[in-house]
Image (cartoon, rainbow, N blue to C red; front, side):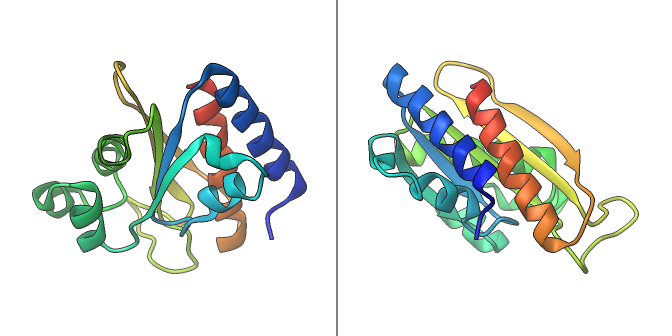
Length: 160
């Protein structure tokens, strides 16, 4: 279950985008669909949310979002480059006005010195604008990292 504050954040974002006549898509790896779940928990979200891609494997990132295999091989899934490609792929494939992406190490395993548990790269693609990326390292266990990632993704979308 998502925290009430996250659902309130999602509702405010949806109202903001609805008022501007904009739509969105999500591309998620480490959150496994939680961003889309937070958004679609709000009644009337279908006026804004066009698509949600859960691309947990590298093969899915390539097949569903067009993330180049060479990029995945060169820098790994948890990277600024992959977050950027995921957001841009979701934007292109969904027809939305903006798209957010997340890829990270939620833990408890899978971390390294270069890519510790809690590391998340987020991407925000908007039609007609450069794609933005953000790097965050969130504290806590798997649940906390995923919850913080959802909140940060919603914040990025609100900033547009």
